[in-house]
Image (cartoon, rainbow, N blue to C red; front, side, top):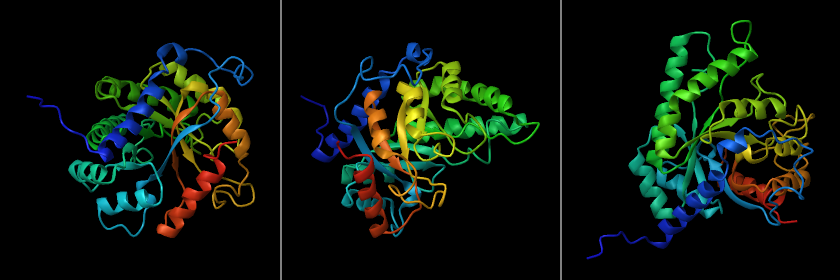
Length: 313
């Protein structure tokens, strides 16, 4: 008698998307982490170059308006052509609700965001707060696994004065992150560091070196394309970080309009970004991180992602 479960097409597609991204990310080993990859070193001649970008388009949970239930969230995204979703932790919905909605729509959950990382920081001067931050991150990893995802987005801290300097954020956050790595590796959930305006690692070389010091395949970069434009071109960051990048946050930014610039209307050089992603052999999830809205708004976001990032040159 065969006791193996029979997967319907929706479940099969969801697992395919999830496993494809996991396999692509898993090729990044501890050896890569210790290897400094400069912008000059990454060229089509000495890297795995993909002629076509293999990207999966997603939206963040908090962007979806007009969806009273978990299933409604998934249905809207499915209808609008997204490939998956990124959820949050802590959440006011259950893993069972998420799994049922995912199975019903064939929409996978690729990961979630640690929603407490700004307020309960791993870099806080108070050791008790840092301990709480580690506990929250640990729970986020558990939640992610329960939802069927495989990454937790983390802001590692914030530079904020003499008692929370750049060195403090560096050292304290690494200490905290290392505490959750046994659980992360056991459950197959990666801790992905997002680059934000927190005063920390404001050059690609700094972020590269930070990840290399952690030197663990379960910690990598969740690269935000728009957040870095203030400091230097996104494509330069991509080439410097190279295989450390596992996922992308998608937004634009401009000197004139800041983050009010819609995707494709800011200062991001999208053709150069696409080329840089090809040059490093990137494949994986790209998730919109912009203001939320109704179906019409989310449809426009999806179309903008198609025109700027998912277009094949």
